[in-house]
Amino acid sequence: MEWYLPVIWAGLIGTAVMLYVVLDGFDLGIAILFPTTGDESERDQMMNSVAPFWDGNETWLVLGGAGLWVAFPLAYAVIMPALYLPVTLMLLSLIFRGVAFEFRWVAKPKHRIWDLAFWLGSTSAAFAQGIILGGLIQGIKVVDRQFAGGPFDWLTPFTLMCGAGVVVGYALLGATWLVFKTEGPVAERARRQAKVLLLGLLAFAALVSLWTPYAHPRIAERWFTPSNLMLLWPFPVLTAFCGYMVWKRLHGKHEFTPFAFTIAIFVLCFLGLAISNYPYLVPPNLTIWDTAAAPSSHIFVLIGVSFLLPMILFYTAFVYWTFRGKVKADSGYH
Image 1 (cartoon, rainbow, N blue to C red):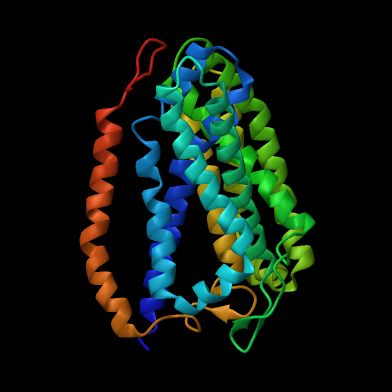
Image 2: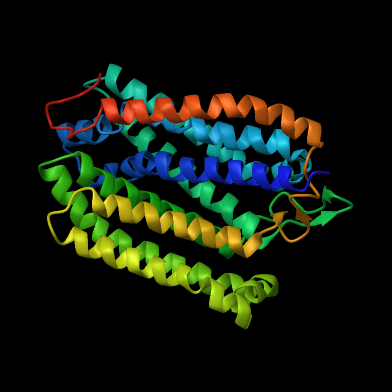
């Protein structure tokens, strides 16, 4: 097997998942913040700030999931039964969120039920994604290259904590997005909310950073052996610096930089998790090479992705450029 093909595919899938977390994270976060205002015009403004983007953002989730299925079929066959319930909850919640997003506009003025559905679907999807992440970090029981655990192995205090952390993190992304894209009371309230949410996210990140090496010696060895510690110390330092910059810029009149530094926190946390678990795709048993498809399959699909990926990137950049600028209270796309 060409050793580099699984590495390339792991990088592609990781990039797709990271882009999904950042891009769909802020519109899920806006829905999580929906109950913080009862004013209909403000809720309209919040939704209009993501109306051109939210459905396209989910493209990256499809690419990541399909890439896992094609490039690492054994990992897909192990992960899905291990996390079947939270994955199903996530997908149903995303469908629920999408239906609520569209139906809210056509149901006006009797749309309160869709406001609730929009918040509930988005919050449930975020929480389920955190549980999935926690389930992967804590490890999956594998015997003879097959899932050998129970249907509720994922349900632990650690995964529930990860679920709550993702909800808080997405809410922070949503709040800083509103600071960037809106004006008036919506933006000012989001600036205040972001300060509290930032402290919550940093607290969850610190808790995960302490919990995982304590519970998993392989992760402690990865981070705290002298040679690795000298190499990896910039990651927590940079994360703390980005948190400080978000806090500082939220207290000023800056609009885009709080959002940018929040994205940087997510990217650094994602890289930290990747460092903790590489090369295991199904921790702590199966590596990317153990679960990889045949090289011919990797090459065949990689040819298709080489054409598809630039199209997705161009479309994404085009949409964000087209709908640049502030979303005012009286503007909309419906």
